[in-house]
Length: 166
Image 1: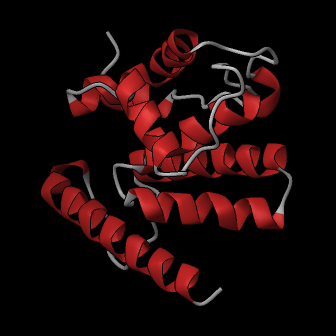
Image 2 (image 1 turned 135 degrees about the vertical axis):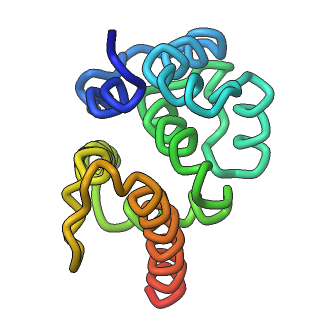
């Protein structure tokens, strides 16, 4: 039986060419996001996305409105980023991150870069390969958890400084 840590390590964020290249209705969009992000729903104990959340992100202009009530591959990519990043960044910071990447790269490249970096970060953290001055043992679980929390804080601060200075 796999542990939740093993399941997270096996997480695969679908790349641009794996996303459906057809227009989707709201329920289809929600279904695809839920299916691919189920591990996070289980971990957080709450819905990762709902139709109400989608409507709010569109109203807040985080994501472009659907075209004739249909969402395309670009919308889906945006929602993957939003669903994942909303746990550590505010919605406006997530929007800034998306805008920043889209200004530098095409949407498909930016989205694939996000997926690659997300999976790399998960692997680094969950395999305890973070470089430290002191080698940690499995018995140092509380120190690993503490370092993960402060690393999340430090990385969020670094992001906020970086976005403001662009």
